[in-house]
Image 1 (tube, rainbow, N blue to C red):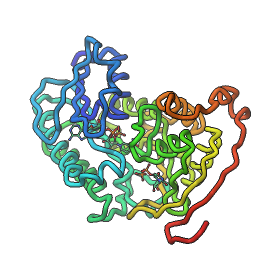
Image 2 (cartoon, rainbow, N blue to C red):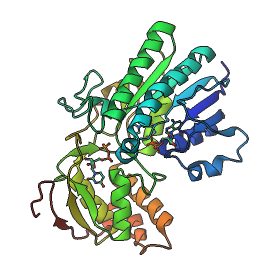
Image 3 (tube, rainbow, N blue to C red):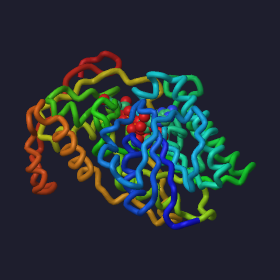
Image 4 (tube, protein in one colour):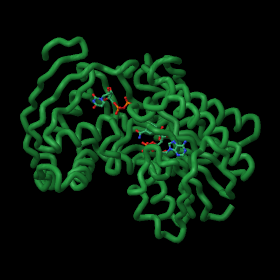
Length: 349
Ligand code: NAD
Ligand code: UDP
């Protein structure tokens, strides 16, 4: 196989996919970006459209695709709970039929194929932090099941295509990842909080805010993707990719308010059904086998994300004095945190 490959990136105009396309192009590969634009945006890949090695194809991966490629990256699937729950049947089809179609393509073209799996396969985990050996605690018929079970079934298909047809697979279990280019209306917590803080609107905190997550900056994750795809067959699959720094969602809200210098308050809302109480990756496998670990601290990644959204919203919103951030951590004034509203039980906070 030549060093420069004909790569296919499904979901390439989404948040993560657009960074992956850039990374592959930078290393000299051809990139065929395939997307149905359900949640992705042309804006994410606009700067790549004139590139001689970049091609964009509007296509839905629930339909078979006949192209000649050397390497497949399967990222197509809405990732935000708001989006994947808005058409749950379509979400299952994308994960399951999309996996079958892309695995069939990998089999025919003898391409190595990467699957963007998720920490959601662990559901509401009883093991903490989550190791790859944990089978998970997943509700098969709740509001998140279309995503969780769809991704679990995709994992099954990937391993069966490997065992039955010897397809070369690489599988990342991705933990919450954030950064510039998330969509303003994405509904995920980092984009929601940052946009709300910049607009001076209340931060919508679901539940009492004690649930935890561990947030990985997008550049770290893409570096992990590339290391995983190029690793040899001795590396056991799947591999957790995420940042193990865990914090509560209330702590995240406080940090966003502090970093934006916003006067926003926190407004408590009901916790959505089946929302996992805790999540933190055990990344020993990635550290040992891929020599990968995240390098961007949450505070630094959030500052970059805030700058992005501030520029994105500019003209419509009060400017936040982000230049203060360039003074480093110690230069950021701690803004007071105002908490109002009701928790999930309707009690006054
Ligand atoms: P995203 O919603 O920004 O991107 C998904 C992309 O897939 C979009 O461009 C969308 O239009 C496209 N798409 C959806 N259904 C499709 C279909 N049927 N055919 C073709 N294209 C389709 O989400 P993201 O954050 O970039 O996530 C990318 C992948 O990583 C997803 O598979 C997601 O499940 C996985 N993942 C992401 C995270 C995260 O924190 N960002 C965490 C775990 C897993
Ligand atoms: N969340 C929140 N306010 C929001 C959006 C999300 O409090 O505006 C909470 C959500 O209930 C969950 C956590 O933040 O506990 C992470 O949510 P997200 O949708 O980003 O990711 P996921 O639940 O898939 O990990």
